[in-house]
Length: 138
Image (cartoon, rainbow, N blue to C red):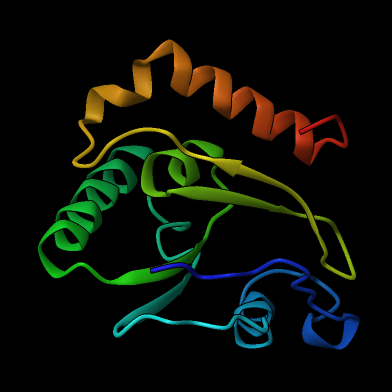
């Protein structure tokens, strides 16, 4: 079921001065997201503090759980590869006041194999997202 986040904005008062650590929790809490699903999870960079191998393993476990439980979620991450691997859509936000500046559909079918990360289309999409983060065309 769709989660519509068009025109979503996070105001200046939703983020602490460092825009890191617990201040990011406020960005999730303050998003105005109409949800039309039964089970919805929100995660604010849950794997940000682990090494890359562990992160990839946790991504795979999360997707396996998604496959069996069928929940919807908002997954905030600072890793482009993680966003592309985990998501059906990637939303790119601007710096304060946190506006949606780009949206990318992720075309890869579920279940997703770890080898997807080496697919040329995966790399192309990741590059397009990176370009949008740096202010280029999305």
